[in-house]
Length: 120
Image (cartoon, rainbow, N blue to C red; front, top):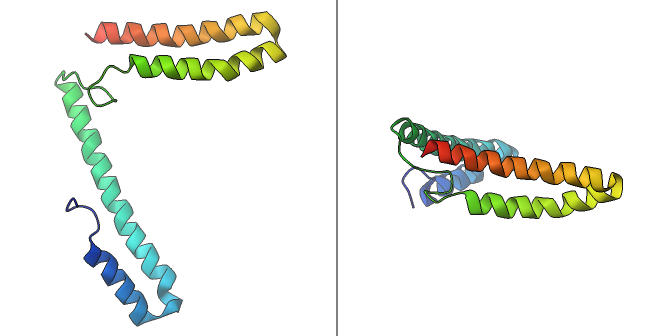
């Protein structure tokens, strides 16, 4: 277990404090333990964000998907979103709404591809 996560000892201490203080302090003990966990999570997230920002500033080719090209994921999400969008557009607005909807989906994919191409 990474050292910045709560250990068994931390949890045991919280349970012990709850036993000593009694059930009337249970909420306070739990809130304190959860606040510590949240603080550690925030620190880890901040460290990861700072790491990615500095990597981006140095021109490192990292991506949000762990170094892989995100275009297949964007394509799959676009197709997945296109199914309900198609149903809603055709039932409410007909072919014009359908064409506008798919033009928007295509524009998002084209813009993403163009942005990746400019970054290289």
